[in-house]
Amino acid sequence: MKKIFLYILAGSLCFSACKKDDEVPTYQEPEDINVQNSYDDQAITKFMNENYLDAQGNIKAFSATDTSDDNEKKLSQLDFKTLPSGTIYIMRDGAQPASGEAQEIKDSSVIRIMGRAYAYQAIDNNGTVLFSAQTPFLNTIDGGNTIPAVDPMFFYVKKKTRTDLGKESSYFEIAGFKEALKKFGAFNLPNEAPYNLQGVIIVPSRAAFGRNAHYPYQSISYRNKSFVFNFQIYGSRDRLSNEE
Image 1 (cartoon, rainbow, N blue to C red):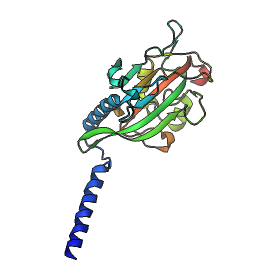
Image 2 (image 1 turned 30 degrees about the vertical axis):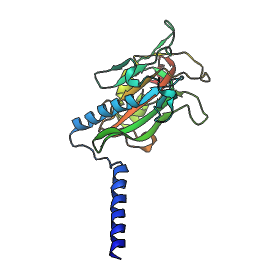
Image 3 (image 1 turned 180 degrees about the vertical axis):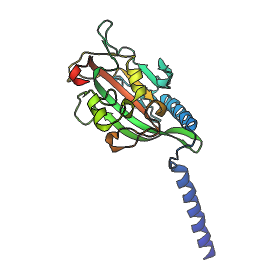
């Protein structure tokens, strides 16, 4: 009987230890914001080493079992640029508007954006810093409704909305995304045109909402969250006075 009890105890301890190894720890906000900034940068580097762009420009994770992606370049091997805010952008080769045909993207432009965007929490998981808690933020591709989003508030928020809620633009807009998107040119495509995603923008939390109050998109908190945008701008035009 004593031996049986010891076997059960040993098995329980083994199960408990294995379970703890597999679990992702609950996120605890670092008191020092510089620690969170470091987490973001490390998690972004890991993300860029573990993902590539497929033939349509979609971000894909490398497979550990499928060899078909072995010759793909990591995002970190592409010609990426890092802005002073820490935001990273990648212009995909061969997927930009033709020279002389690109529409300028300005601070107040009305844009049409096709693509996906996710928010992530950068955490330290037993000494490995990575992106956790993937949360959908924008998706105009999956679900059978492939139509670009028009004039999203996270790029430009109208004065009436700001006034009605008594908030500044930063409460709504993702600064790092806006900063990087202006480096791109927009296409002039009809909404029904097939997509060929032109780039990636990765925004660390300090260039998004950080720890500031923000608009509750999707009724979710984006405090300390980084964003990854995988997109194509179908059009950009000047904003009319009644749209400001």
